[in-house]
Length: 232
Image (cartoon, rainbow, N blue to C red; front, side, top):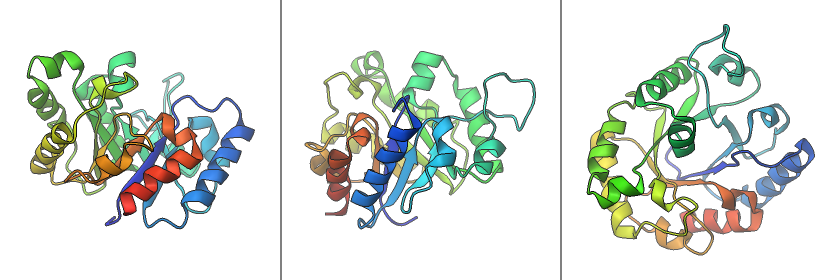
């Protein structure tokens, strides 16, 4: 996995399978010529139908048991059986909206790896942590729960820079990515309001091995610009 990584996290979008397939095909056509590892993380229900040429499919979450009485959960083996190769663990919305703990996230990552899935493991601090100077402490704690595996990629998501109109500076990103690489030796993606207009600046930051993109990944032309920024 020497190439840079461009990952699309569609979150709870779009609202129909027809739109999901149209969007995936358009992204596939626009990005297939770029020398990148191209990952697509749609909602669970769309994974079986999005068999497009150049996009590797993943899931936005996973449960840590293979099967059982866990209503509403999806196991790693189920994901494998419908074509998923990757899974996101610890996205800021899972941590801060759903309330998942570091202990639960480690179990999820370990279960995914055991099943043969690759993992994007997300870490990042809230605004209160950043303003109090605790950002390094918080991220180091989160990193201590990341399994040791070459099949893990870390994504740094400063929570205060996601959908808030605020952006982390290149210096702040470089500091945190260098810390993560020092602690883990793993590839590090940046995920904090990456857009077409700022992708080139962000891609030039040392130790940025790719992007985990939310809203902009639903806009094929803009997503293409972000991919181009990683390959310049």
